[in-house]
Length: 225
Image (cartoon, rainbow, N blue to C red):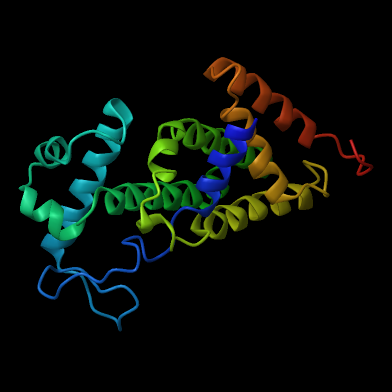
């Protein structure tokens, strides 16, 4: 349980807008400096960045965060120099991949709301969120490596995912499809704890437990459960 709390805390803290740990990219690499005035990123630099992040996500999923950066560069079809211009340190790349996946998960909430009824949208998002958490178990060694790049990362996780979930909850409650006293913070923590459970550590277990949580949301007597 301690490991669950530690990893959830790290997931909860990891990533802010300054994913490069407060460092500023050199001019001429096509990236906008962190905290700088509006400076559009070049199309070719954006393409390279997207290729690197997607390649890193896939490599981390199969080989873990200790995979060689050369493997990532090769998968992206780019040179090592391009990779290091965007991500001088491995921790920069890990944080950027994580932040990108947080954004995708958060953005899915509004997309699902447009495609489904409120309760169905909430259910599908919670399943997506649980998958997201489950695939992040391998980040623990990196997050607790003592790398200073992580020290300055603010609670981007909370800032992006909490409002996304709260909107889904509010909409479903307004439609009388769930109880009205569900707290987004509590639900995020509960799902994360289930998905990072050390004893079971199995998708089947997590899916069953998430199903029970979702069923419990239907219980509309607002007295404490």
